[in-house]
Length: 104
Image (cartoon, rainbow, N blue to C red):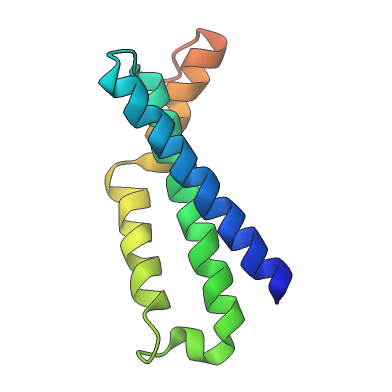
């Protein structure tokens, strides 16, 4: 249980540091679209992983209305989908890494 809590805390802190760094780059006028895609992709994945771990910790209670975990998970799933976070940002980062656009 403690390992799961530590993993969740580390993931959230890492995501916070990524967001803080990107915010500082934006303030300095040095933020690129690729960096934004990285932040959105990684932080959305991290948040979903943490929510899933939290639901697992709660066991069967994790899917009841007594705890808000499932509400957070469905909200995160919509963010993952509506901005095309997984697919679009992966394509953007793939192009940045290889120089080859996999989309038109």
